[in-house]
Image (tube, rainbow, N blue to C red; front, side, top):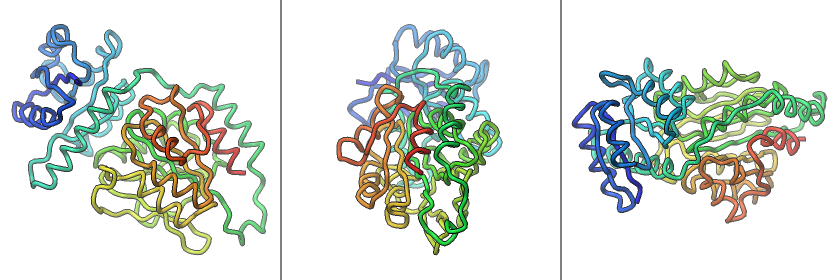
Length: 353
């Protein structure tokens, strides 16, 4: 059983989350707290495996509380918030402070929205329970290694390359623990890297701030993808929260299509959607990468990419926060090679030559 403590100042949210989490036989809500001070005592008494935490609460804000938890008694924390454009930058800080993932508060607007919300909340809590808490960093040494590899394998542009349609594109999928893994990976990428397109499981209203934060940290350009954006060298496009992202092709130009669509593999955006569209439209001109995450989203799509001639890489167990998605892809033959996160950028650049 996964023991969960719910920390939120709203009685309605505490009740809704309790009902949702208790509907799964693998989860037990051992307690609730209306503020961080009450939560500290509950943590001592109940010893939860996972905490769901709001960031806006009286007496002490959730971000301050999170930092204290991670410095004194690390425990997997899932941020549960009403996401707004104004507040999304705070949630980026929460991930950097050690939160495992972010979910939106239960949607009570319509039955199908509530069911989607329920599935995503359960998935996030189960993923958090499996998380290995550790600090991931892109050290200057690793960045230097990546640059050295890039200089060795990225040849100068040839005029003939403009007529060829063999320029590589890189499709990347991640979930639990993926925000930090992506930071490490993208910070290690040089401006000469192939076009990157990314699906990270995260809610609507958050991916723009996440992309902006990565853009500030990385040498390459990072942006939230918009419909019809071209895939360009030295750029990473991040799928918008609650939207599917597909890779399309027109002649030698690769671009993205953004759509609503139903949940796929219990997610929107779905890694399977990205990988399958890449297999169909890029084939052997693509590289597929699956990073840390709970569940099996992306496994089937990565296998389709490999069957279509793409090179495929999976994050190894030791460096994964949750070795779920990479494991499933490996077991069905979707992963050609397993790689530690610190060497993933260099490995991508090597197979892209």
